Length: 234
Picture 1 (cartoon, rainbow, N blue to C red):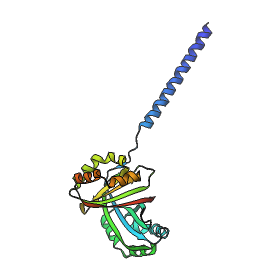
Picture 2 (picture 1 turned 90 degrees about the vertical axis):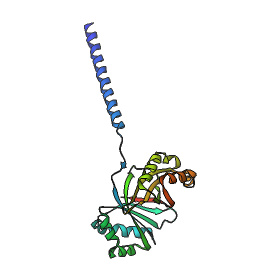
Picture 3 (picture 1 turned 180 degrees about the vertical axis):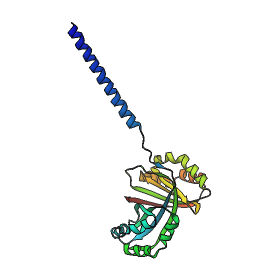
Picture 4 (picture 1 turned 30 degrees about the vertical axis):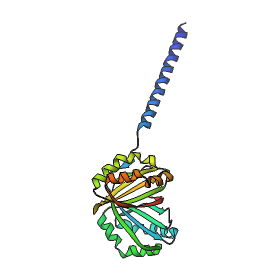
């Protein structure tokens, strides 16, 4: 009988120990899963955006990446390469800039003109400078983006209005990825969105809801919009 009681006691202690270990493991797993990853960046980021047409994308891409050292010398860092949906030879290049003054000097350097000619750039490029104050860096499945450039009456009014509806954008097939303003004139605003549902997005762009949101944000005139596909992110 004594042996039996001792044996039972040992089993109970073992079961208790196993249960405690299981509970601890489960608690640890729950704690690990509960830790969210913040993908939102609100630290201002200098961005240089260049749009131009190329004769052959593959040739241009090779020339562009082969000239990276010249850009780095001017504090420019490759960020995103995209191609328009309506014309795949229309390219948008986004670069992070250490200093706008150096970036602007580089844009006027004869070397850049030669590099563009080597890459088969057609016509004159359009170069824009923006201070991005919101970026969502989360990895998402869709590579389709909308780039909207607009004029607003007041930057703070537009930002407050846009932020109040930003969480609802996924319901209309869009998700804000980045926005900012021209450092020389914050009435010029740029907005980048991920197109999650093409049909919903196009319907929204024609909707009264968008007209109302533009009015609330103080948008002047009709914004310029470009839809493109991200082909490389550095």
